[in-house]
Image (cartoon, rainbow, N blue to C red; front, side, top):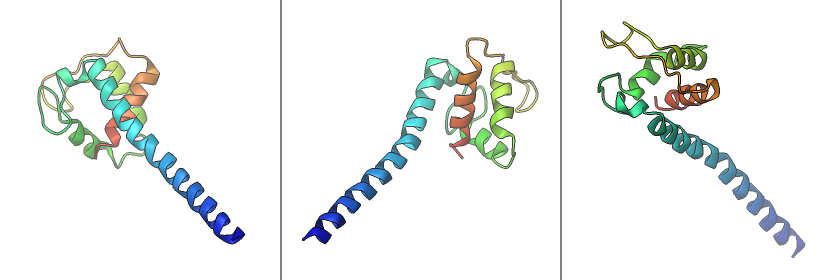
Length: 112
């Protein structure tokens, strides 16, 4: 009987661990999208289709192979950019903190 109880406890612990691992990815996705919406990123970008700026999925695909992708995108988000995705410039996002820009960059890279 004790071995059955230990097995049940082990199964419950394994399930709890699996759920706690799965939640942060979902939470990061929800948090990233919410931050992008709150900070007006979605005024020029869409997740899946080009709009005024490139689709965020396309951004993720373009930079997925870069070792410094998160840092690179963080600086592009903060400082703005011209000529990378066409003639429409991306203005600097002075309303963002560096931590918010890092969170957005990390979220974008999950969209590949």
